[in-house]
Amino acid sequence: MSESPVLLVTCQEWAEGEPGHAALDTALAARGLESRWVLWDDLSVDWGAAQVVAVRSAWDYSTRLGEFLGWATGVGPALLNGADVFRWNTDKSYLIDLARAGLPVVPTVAADDVMAVRAAAKQFGTAVLKPRVGAGGRGVEVVEGGRGWLPSADSHQGPWVVQPLIDTVREHGETSVFVIAGRPVSQVDKVPGPGEIRVQQQYGGHSRSVELSDEAALLAAQAIATTVDLIGAEIVYGRVDMMWYDDGLVVCEIELTEPGLYLDVMPLNAGPFADAILARF
Image (tube, rainbow, N blue to C red; front, top):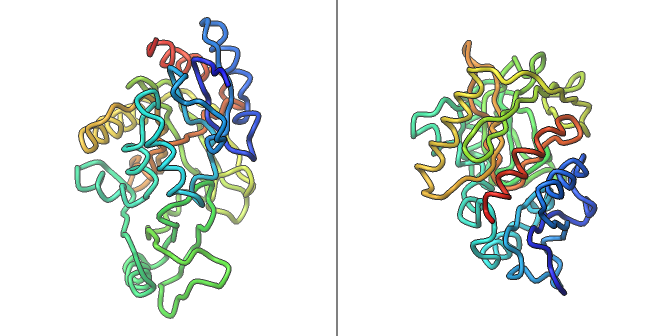
């Protein structure tokens, strides 16, 4: 099968592309770039024929991580960010690496077993438990105190990261900065629905574009620069998620594998992303 110079990678559930993908399709075409949305696990795709491969909405990776990383390793240098970045970024214990490097980060403990979860939750009082490998808010759980806690039969069975529940999330949610080609370009605020701490739309959350603030832009740039120093790899695109904690912003996640561009809310994100792809030609 002949391929396009630019392959935009997605999964079966989002086979047409990420939400708002028409903005990116249009931006690439306006720059004279031929692009096509493809499934990362489609065996008929000739990855070697593409000049740029950009992972966009491959949001099933968390349940198929070994397969996904194997695929990424096989794509080669056309893959933006690349397999080494994905391997580091898909395990949320990377937050501990960032904290050790001096970046302000939500306090995070890696827990491999139930006793480690209980100890961390006791330390934090009210804790948030997340799968070490997970996406879209799936498997997130609030744990009170930790004493006697056990995972339910239908919940994530480990390993986890454990963090304190930061009260500001209920009212203020999170804010995210998109960093493309090393430059913070835009910001979105994400607020959870009633009774929730998760900001994703499927849990009642909503997002809105806001003006890029100096504080958030600086922290996002620092987060990407710290990651580059830690991994020693080029970061072409990323989204830095932040929360308000102790009177300032701290990093709660860095999305470098398949960060949604929120094109349905912020279609102008398509331009800088398309420019970053054009620069590879």
